[in-house]
Length: 366
Image 1 (cartoon, helix red, strand yellow):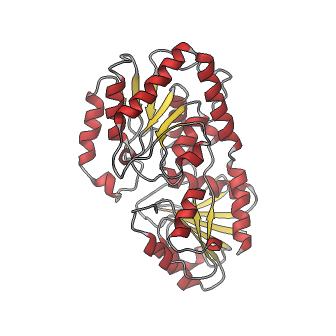
Image 2: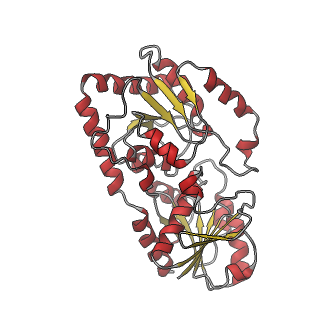
Image 3: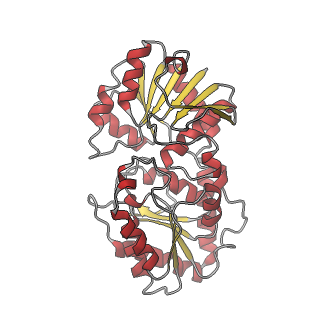
């Protein structure tokens, strides 16, 4: 088959190599890994992004995003990331032949984008590709027929899978916690929770690997000056080490040295690639039971009650982190076993080869 993966934002330059060598947001990482897995299975795969020049990497043909019909007209399927109007324009230009799949990662309760997504997917061969069963059920509740919406969860990148037999070996004192999601997803409550934790655990550290530098230049969060004050707060808070976004290989190494991911999620999480990566790396995940996070963590995370919109109880997260640190000191074997079980579940949850097979079936079903 010929499959095109398209990110319509011309200000977001990346290629396949970016997922291995640089920093890339979750939606784009999922897109790249799907593209690469489909190419490994022998399909002709094109990845269209804001990257300015054509290049072929891991058998994926990377092109600048364009409306040139030559890039699409022979495709069996076109997977469009997070921009339904682009999918609608392609359907109008290309007629009935290609299967057009809207890979929607940014639609959740209150997001206000259902009307756009549903209006752009009127053709019987148009499909929504969601990131979890929770995400899929949300689309169905919004009015899309069950046969038109499919769930294809992300998989952990082998880059993050710790090979260590003893997952506590690299987590010596001082104990490190990590925060890796985008800042708007919970950085402020993470800082508040950590400040409370430090009252009882004075040597604990929080390492923040988060900013918007790997987002496109026209992203509304990246353009907001308010985040500079948050980064400054990170740098001024005792015990907090602010790193910003770092290349994915370095992030994988850093997570292997952290005991837990501290993620007080303040929004509906459609999947949570960061929690899969953390569990694969041998971290305990402390997060909210929000959106798809219970589904994606498989019963191996500390899940606190989901917040009211925009509200988190920092003391609850501080308490969960303190309990973990105390258990590590008092019963390290139990902590070690829990980390190993979470890593094993994440590996069983699926890999990108498995996801590619499922995407093939979705395309062929149309």
